[in-house]
Length: 308
View: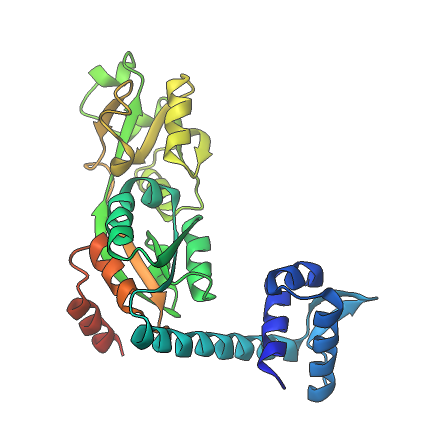
């Protein structure tokens, strides 16, 4: 059994049983990947993948367990390399962050700018998705750090540390009747077409629960994962927008009126998550502190000791 073979089966499964795509990612040939999978299965005397003719169609029951163990081995090798890099090249490496659009667009820029100035030899990658996708990328080892609201704190494979709290606001065209119909209530919001975040977002689920508990049904006509998209359609007169407070820019969004909704909805907490078995490079800890000054190295180490 070779580490290379474990990498091959791991990547094939990751690419949805597509050997050609896996071979491209691994910078090798399709026949080479197929041959190594066959040799590994022969050595183990079982099938890892189900087959439909010459094509892979799924994973067998023993294959599921082998893939789980292979992922642990691969992550362990990555951690060993991280340790070597940490003590051999302190300021050189990569940092992959998975986060939502709102966090990437409105909360991360200052921390990213400071980080890139402090660590010019670290390659930074930012992947965007909804909180479930962010959590999955961190749990699989595809991303080092995940930044999202609530749901990332529910995965048992991850440590999740609170970064900051936020709430919501309405954005409306300047002549909208709600501007002169304060104080704002859920019923008043429900009287107009509403544009808000996709309900795959935890924040969206929380909003729907607040309306439900109040016995009010909002008239949601459009959802999006991008606050800028929401504001664009509000500007077109298609409805009123419910977005994160942080997503309203007083200069850029001066053509829209903002009404705070913090009295209607509980605060949401944005968490920073990472795998429990991951080795954190020094510059990763530095990025966490730049993003949330309360997450000092001592605070993170204390939280890890308390959780273990």
